[in-house]
Image (cartoon, rainbow, N blue to C red):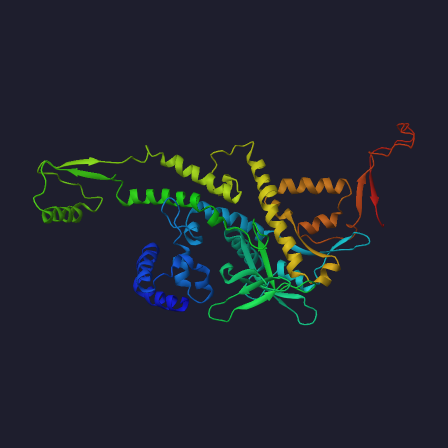
Length: 461
């Protein structure tokens, strides 16, 4: 029955294309009720249409879920709201901008090094494929998981070793996580690309994975919740407020009104003719009504001030930001930001929001991209948050000074962080010796034992 329904709906899309998606959905459901009896589109998963080559029908059904405000909320309609767009952008682009490098930890000594000779290193540092850069790829995948709760990529591996050599992003609607119906009940990913046959990728213990799956906050451990779906009511209310403002200005700032007449129309035809003439003449907002025959023009409804529209729109900013755990000042609302708290708000974004997404990336890359042999050899991914200080020269220099004075880093290591060339003799570490170790008795040093503060060179000459 499903192919018959989809073929019938597909033939109607071209004729109904000029109409609004909600109107299309209503007409399709009406036609469906007459043509297909008891089979309802409400019982059909909208993703099925996209996975089987009907993106037009999918966009209609996916955008047909109305909030309490009456507005249809989907990923596309939600992104049309500036706050949703800004929240998604600040998280996705920040994650995509931060360097993600492949490191290796020596299990005996605990020493770490940058494993830039490995092919996997360039996937997240340079480019995952010939089609996009590392930032474009990671910001796209982060956007998928931020909005829909799930981000998927196909891992292309080298035959023999299984080393990952390419990552190709998949649309979230193309992939469906599931469990095997029998046997070990292993996790499987069903991937449907257009009209191509559906492919099944099974997660097998001790073998490299074929699908990189980034999960947001979820319930069953295999899929994440879509913030667009969970926050549909809040986003729908915000869209309705924007719609109200647009309607007001489209009407030339004219409030709804009624015409009060002293006498009734004699016939329905007279009433219809008067309404049609009035709407033709004064339907345009800039044309002033001319009243005659005891007609009274009365405004109805509340004006924008009485509706507290500005307060409502400001509340919508905070309401949507709560869903994304983003501080309002990052999306342009500085009403609660002050000189004393703006820096703390930025730090909270890094600690409470950004760190969770970075941890998801690091752990899923370790789980899905690295082979079991690479994981056993101590390879792992790590983000470098120092990139967030690129625009703060004073803070960077203050931090470098502290590291140099306490022997934490050498001059060449600091120069490398600034992309400056090293120089001979810059690999030594130095500390100040004015902080000395007390004798074993715990007594303070006598004047003869004390030395004047100086820099002591550590390491090879």
